[in-house]
Length: 250
Image (cartoon, rainbow, N blue to C red; front, top):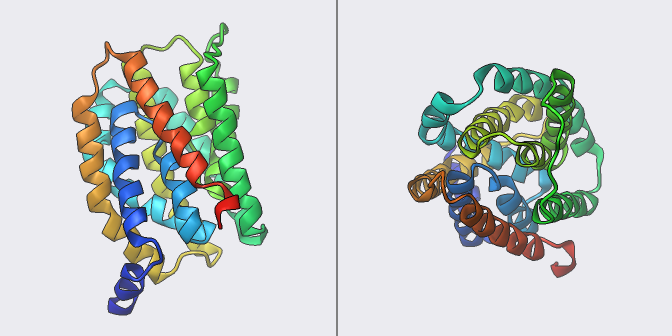
């Protein structure tokens, strides 16, 4: 483990990754989504996609300890637990794709998926139909697949929630519980396919502190009545992260 810790501290761009982790935690605590959209485009500049996903999964421990308990009290528990279960079914397929895909192609996938979802949110698209069991299952299945393959288990879910008429506090709570639990759940699937190593584990554990501090900072800023404000702040930071993470820079 000392060797893994030394390797983690020597990670190229370590300070940039720490900064991205804090900002990701703040966005997540504030808006209830966006951690992966901030973290992954920056992290994949310096880390292989599998290592970045593993690191992101480990820092979910921090949000489970700090953000999930208050979110759980407001969440639609039955719907959220059902979606988590569905996501776990499709996640191994996503990890299998991650194992054989080209890293540059996956980075384009990360930034492309993030850009499409951000654009849809900015355009203010809204659904008019109800949140059926079938619709939730389809969204959760897609989220599990993308969580395993590109580390973005949130964008499709967020688009689904924010395009509906669910109260902001409930939508945010559902999203926090889903993303935190499925983020951590990807780790055993990565390990089973040989994509989890000691350096990634050490780096993830090191980043738990800045992520937790960022999450608590963002949570302290959240006000249910200021929906448009927190959306605007999150969208701006996510857009900047997408630009930084474009594969054209390296």
